[in-house]
Length: 363
Image (cartoon, rainbow, N blue to C red; front, side, top):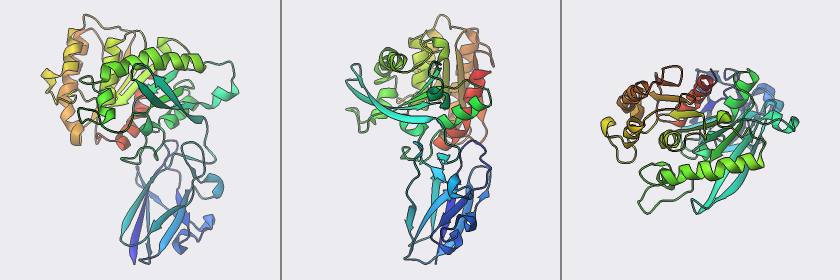
């Protein structure tokens, strides 16, 4: 016999709602959702386990207790049965993109050719529920780096966890914290650069291709969205964000291209960049120090955790705060810097922190 553990990350809306595994095994109800196995919620994961014959296989789906409330993919499709061949003890982890009876909005995919980057970039664009229903209404836009990680857990190939950017935008709009908002994720090409960096790191790093990528954002992507979608074509209605090097690129874009974006989300900002500079040697913090003045219409959210790599980021953010205050910015007004207890440099941590960023920017 082998022990199979299920570990399920729920959607951000009502995460405590009971979750079940329905499947082919007798302990999973033999495909009767009324007899499916209930999972226990620990505040982050829904957990449960079964024992099954080694050499057999199990098929299953995730539900909230009925086929009408089964899990769906980020694009709203009902997925095929999950299947696991049983040979050893195993933990099967899934992130639920949404539920069939709650799914709203529309996630689309398109490709944009960039003359600046000399190639195409894939865009994942989430349109809020009101976009189709309110044909004259215009919407603010959130632009995010690492597009493959922000909406779709299946696209987040390293961790299988997404930031739930569409879920947070939908949830906070329903709570009247933010207006209904379009969310754009920019995907980075695969492969490696001539400098032996991943193409993602190359085009986000200010030490390499970051300046060209920022120019692509402001000169090609923003105009494309304003021309082809019903956006509010004003700086006050635009947010730019990312995590790690994506956050660093957002920060440098704010300095290099004032007047395009008003709000910035910087999660676990990698101020050390690819050169691994210490805080006083960080080129990005030096660029901030050299700025003669900062626009007080801008709002910026910064955070970092206290675990793993993020634990090393305190010194950079302490210096960041010193520079921002010296320019006349006020804590809790133009900016905030949060150290997140238990936070780490990971998608699962950024998933929980993304909502806090949107709340601050809306406050």
